[in-house]
Amino acid sequence: MKTNNIKTQGAITKMQTSRISRSLVILFLTLVITIPCATAQWRIELPVFVSPRATVSQTFGTTDVSVEYSRPSVKSRAIWGDLVPYGEVWRAGANANTVVRLEHDVAIMGDTLKAGSYGLHMIPNEKEWTVIFSNDFEAWGSYAYAKEQDALRVTVSPELVEDHQEQLQYYFDNVEISKGELILHWAKLRIVIPMEVNVERNTILGFKERLQDLEDTTLLWDDFYLAASYCVRRKSNQDQAYQWNERSILLDSNFDNLYLKSIFLMRMDQKDEASRVEAVSFERADEEQLNNLGLGLIRSKKSEKAVRILNYTATRYPDSWKVHYNLGLAYSAHGDKKKALKKLRLALKLASKDDTDKINDKIEEIRSS
Image (cartoon, rainbow, N blue to C red; front, top):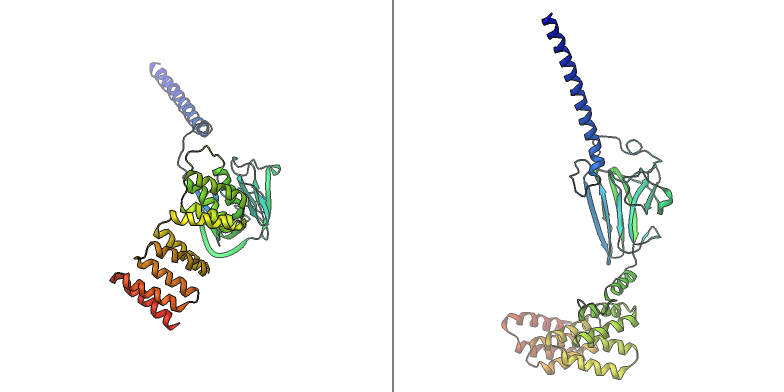
């Protein structure tokens, strides 16, 4: 009887152990399943082992455009119309939302998309795709996609290509200062999304945002000067540009901002005042600044003014071969070959041996022209 009791107790113990083991397994699986929900509340970053995250960015003018996305792999699977079904909203990547961030307004195929962040979704079909920019950019994929959150929809045609792209990739191509293409490439298919920005508008907007706080002690004279000189070159936003340059002069009156003021005054038809301010600016300039100004005028095909300024420079720096060399270039550009050669020969006398070859080459070039 004792033996039987021992066997019976042993069997009961094994059954209890088995039940306990199954309970522990269930508990463990429950914990494993619930861990992602718990960690979703934690502000820590874990590595992504499948479809790693990536970011690509491009600057158009002064406008930054970036795409944050995940990169799933093909892994010998059929992608289009299979893994990614036709006619259904797709997250245009993997895992969390694909996010497009725009620093300024951007035109997408002619339609304006305001500055901000957008969730990128797509509806693939064999011959036509719908590209969706959603105001909701914090969702997980396209599961919570809601059409009422659409900021913009555009239609594009897919391109079948020979190059196989194993991991989904976004990149920018055919980039110019104001436009380019955002391209999605996965497997043997590409989606091209044309983008265009208003460089002039966005640049001026950036100036205004940066320079609006006159109490900002980090702003220096050249911040205001650079904004003003850009507007002068582009002949835009002139009234505001004049005020920026006046602020620059207030912070530090120097050759750059005084000469720029003379240009403003000339455009305002205040010729006498423009000449006076220009003369003051020249007094503040050094040899290098005056030489650079003269050369810039030659490149701008304003040779008459270049001759005048470089003649003034030569009176201040009569022993500088560079001044006479540049004056020779100015006379040559102005069509006065005789005076050009005279100034170049003077430069040759004043120059060191290291610089004579350059001057002789220019003399020979003008002689034979």
